[in-house]
Figure 1: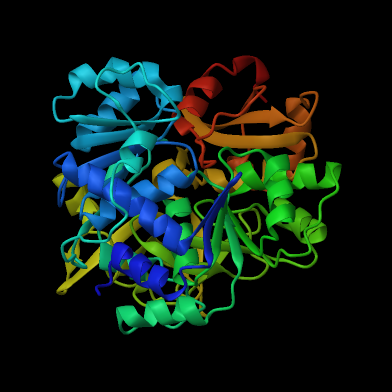
Figure 2 (figure 1 turned 60 degrees about the vertical axis):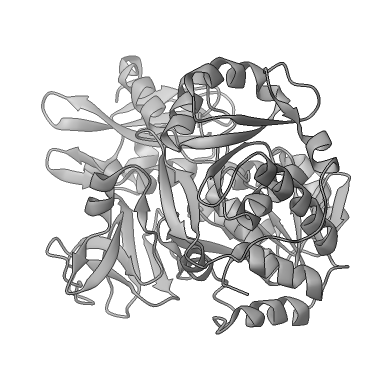
Length: 526
């Protein structure tokens, strides 16, 4: 057995095969059943000529088929490729071409988009359609393909150096595939509340010995955070619960029905509608003991709301990235509007200055959050970005996360924001996350995204795109709210009001869209 996701899942299936591994709607599979289901799919893919190192793209919503596709690809040492199911034709064509995908498992809801791009992708030779008959020529019905194969587990040995790819980004540019060795990926996203395993058998024993719990990733599986949350749950022998789409009422009904103990969201974009629904409806949340945000930070006002609505649960923020893994936990009392501080709970996390030297704690010097050790290999098909992001110094390889930060005297890391999103206005840097959190603290603001727009005098000026809770507030009202809480140079100079904020399925802001909207906000300048 290797430190390989497929090896470990098979070992756990042998140890606790009767325990429920996955629930989605009416579907409920034990570890043994999911293993056999994934074996059938793996045999089909292998029979189609898909072998080690080949890329299998997955364009599905949450469900049994997605989980099985991840496991099946790994079982035959192929590489699963996550596809954003919201992609339009040009974006889908780009990702499938950039990833060199040879197979695509997709939902027939996306038939028209798939049919439009397939002729332009000569490497894409095998199509599996989930959800009924597909109009795409040559597509094989998923259910028929799986039913025709053996559930036996007879695959070649695997390696901890096998490849895993997670496509990420797209808010400021086209997405990039983050390359991992599967063993490094496993340790980078290991649950820090458990000791790191010394052998693969330790992971199986942990799953066998841990009392059964139920965990629920809310984000779509096309987002790396939900995939990692799923593996973390399985290494604990837990039951993973999904909903096919994010719907706050359905999430709470599912939590009540399945007695969910722990759930993960990605920031305010999911937490706010969940809090709203909890205030409107009546749900039994007594089973819930952890509400965790990964991939995006909760604003303080939202975290306080959740703390009041869920008195029996702890509300946590985890800090990390697709390239670094999960690295730290938010310090109690910190928030984007008060100042974000995180306590690293893995080795190799620090802040490096421009010379790639560690920032001295308490010095106030600014640098980038960096990690060494269990980090990604780089970016698929992008050696230049890999070299910039993963420099070597003193015989040590680092990941520069792009998060601008300093180290406090107590060793905690104070994070100001993403360097790539920072707004330079008159020589001052403004980090959108801080301003967004303040805006979302106003009762008339449901959601907000802050960006920079061109300004002849200052180079850039701060602008905000706001989704109101009801009627749009006056810009002067928001201006007064922000000026009471922020330095003047951070306060938005223009507002654009929208009926609905555009975010990714995982809740990430679409800054390209927001910038374009904000540039047309002249009538709302303050």
